[in-house]
Image (cartoon, rainbow, N blue to C red):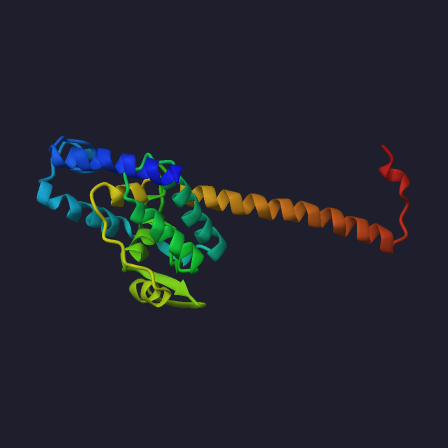
Length: 210
């Protein structure tokens, strides 16, 4: 309930900026070196759609399912802090995708990791908006089909939301977290394998004395 209040309060700030025609980065301006270019109010929604499409240029094999689920969970956690300016519907879309196992096809290469994992996160945004590709019930299908089969409403991006989805480090964080869990499992497995090998060889315990 607290997270919902924080998300709604932050979204109200964005709506006020739009209504009062206050110039703010990423809401009614271009991005990066185009930050000084003011975008007409009627084009601010289209701007968010275009930032997703322009950055969805990743290449290579797809990230694994566990990494992608981690990405979605981390992005959701970021939104729940209430500082991103997105509507509650954006968070609810991610919750539904996680719960119903709609896994976006995210190529592993493309992010520069400077202003965040822009390229890979854009591929996640594609599926949220009914584009791109996703895995559902073990099959790779069109993003729109995956969302429809799972009974999840297609998200229509509004001001600030495309930027909010793309701008973050959730991909590298998920990859690091999964790697850490695998490393911990590997260390535990090595200890067990070593102990069982020693047992099978009837080895001496004395070398293990403190």
